[in-house]
Image (cartoon, rainbow, N blue to C red; front, side, top):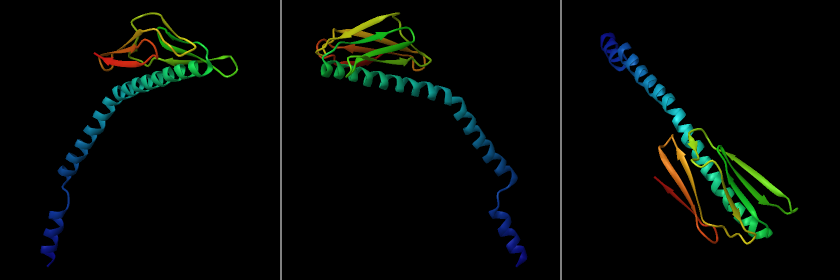
Length: 151
């Protein structure tokens, strides 16, 4: 009886080599995830920038039409500046800093939104070294519809 119990317990347990193999595979997976983490963070920062830019642009159009005041978009080397009209006839300035790996080929672009929310056509280029893509934001004439292309 004890011999049978001893054989059963010996067969159901992990051997030392099996345990080391499992630990090796787990440590390999963890180390690979740490290597991929910076690129995941950079791509997420780009997505956040574009979401913030698009929502800020839409807010600028809405505020310009609602307040019947002009607004402005400035594209600079390392940031985008949106200037909104406010209730107190002041202007609210929102700066969106470009994340690392995202550049603007043009040094300075200025786009005005009329007091009726009408925008002249424009193209804004963003180049990403993280994804190796060029993002082109086309602003349509008139109501300023924003179209995004990637190359």
